[in-house]
Every structure is written in C-alpha cells, then in structure tokens.
Length: 427
Image (cartoon, rainbow, N blue to C red; front, side):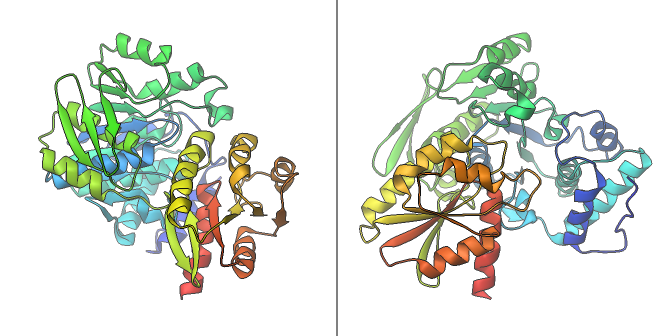
C-alpha cells in the first residue's frame, strides 16, 4: 500500500492517522521489517543504560516507579510505555515530562523517510516505537526504561539490548499471538533476556521453566520474588528486603508488589541510587488510569485500565477499600467494554458481585469485542446497551443516584473514549 506521506504537516494527529493506515495489520509480530529501519536511524545501540520490562500485568506501574526513582537519583530518564489513555504523548516521557508534538512529528518524519529508503512498511506500534527511541537519542537520556507492548521476543522494543531485564508476571493474555499456555507465553516474555544481564522475575506464581532455561542459557543472574527479594506491607509503610538488606519505604499510589519489583530492579542495575531517591520515587509515582478518581458534574467516577483477571483483582481490592472509606456510596454502576482477545467471561465473573448495573457498547477499534459477546457474559445482569461508549457514559452519568458511583473499566480504549467525554464536559 503506497499512502502519501504527510511530510508537509506538523500536526501530530495527522501523523498518527497516517501510521494507522500504512501497514496492513495493526499487530504484526516480528523484527525482520523493523530492524533495517532502526539500523538506518542508528537507534539500536543507545549510549544509555537500558531497562526493559515485560509481563502480563504491572508493567506500566513498574516502569513508572523505576523511572521516578531514577529521576530523583539525578538521571535523565527516557520512559516508553503503551498504550496511552488520554494523549499519545503519554507514551514518551523524559524525566517525567511528555515529549512535545513538535519532537514527535520531527521523529515521525525521520522514521517515515528511513522506512521508505528501506522499501518497507511499518505498523503503527513499530513506527511510533522507533520515533520514541529517536527522541530519547536526541535528548541524550542517561537511562531508558522501556515497556514491552506485546510478548517480548518479537516485540519491536526488543530491538534494543537491555542491561536489565524484568518480567513482572505471566498470565493468559493475548493468547492468539503468544500461545495458550503459561509456558508458551513465558517463552515469549523470556525473549528479552540477554547474556550475563541481571534478570528480575516478579511473578507470584512458580518460576516458569522457559524463563529459568533462558536465564541459564544466557548465564543471566536471575532474581525472583519470594526467593531473592521480599516485601512486607504495613498500614502506611512497607518493607523491602533481600538476604543482604532491609529498607523501610512509604506507600505510594501504585501497588506495593510493583513497587518492590521496581526497587529490586534498581538494586541490581548498577546505577548510583540513594535510599532517599528510592523512597521519593515510590511515594510520588503515579499513572493515569490506575484507579483514577475524578469528579464529573459533581459525581464520582473511577477510571481503571484493568482488562484481565489479575488486573481486575487488584482493581477490586482498591474499590473495596474505597467503599469502606466512603460509606455514602452503596452501589457501583459500570461503563464497560473490552477487546475480543481478552478473557471477557473471567473479568465479568469477577466484577459481577460488585456491579449493580452495566452500561455497555462496542469499542471503535478492529479488536473490539462484539457487543453480543459481552451481552452473553452479562445475561443475568441489569444491562443498558448504547451505540457507543460516549453515549453509554453520558447515560450512566445522567441517571446516577447520590448513593452510586461510576466505574469505567475493561480496556484502555474504554478509558480513552470516556476521558474524551469528560474533557468535553469540562470545556
């Protein structure tokens, strides 16, 4: 497909729409096409130290906390995450500040020229990832903290060799692309491990054989949760420990398990980081769409990106705590939709006991779950179907009673769409 390049425009949205049309499929795992373009851009061997994080859940929080700790330690930190929720720029941050539209457009121009010179097409994710790496190179970052988008072995982020590899956990997610067993998925995640680099496995399950084998072949020192590092939660503090050290830390806004993973990562990174920087980073780290509480027209709305059983379990823990502390709320109304490749039945089964009614609609994306699929999973519930998520949210907001709150969840796409509605309300 030969689509005209928007080289004459400096409008970020025009470029994002362009990258969404250049390649035939939205997800196309493999590094054969992207590597020549990356090499032409000279971004495959950054001067910065690189920390790469894969896993089924917890990647966003873990990378956020690592980056915040390193920022407090005085490093210039490039943080790459996906997907975004409210603005594309959220994906590319330097020391906590989003890349500007102008920086991203300049990088897109270079990426497009390079891929044309190579005679190759790039998917949206490939092109935008290369652009992020180019921005980090131009900003001369000291450390890159990179979140794997999908899997590990064949993800475009994996074109850069990490100095530290982190695998947060392994769950059954993206099974159409990664495999239908924990071991198959673990093998894909283990693809980020390189020879002789420290590797963290923070899963709360038994160490998958595929990760153990890859670490052994690579002679990579392997540090596992509940074997090589531990944590103990208290009411307002928590303790991180290894066989050699113990560190008392404040509780932040993100899950303590992910904070412990981040601290373990920093500890093995070889970077110069004080205990004070660790504490400050853990306390201040925050991420959009993780039990985010907003007021809309005087009503309470909670937005959470939970979209698989593990993420929803943590969401429900936070929701139960919130309801105990805010006893005026006795019912939760959900604005909900999911992607078709997620475990819809398992997620809904977890949420059902807490949700009094559901406002649902299909998402505006090729991977959207058909509305009938969601309806079948909710057949014994009180359900209101709308033509799109914006209308579903508006209907929930207009009919909300004083004893009710709205919970928006099921997908990053659901949150993004609702946030656009909220932004419109506030204009």
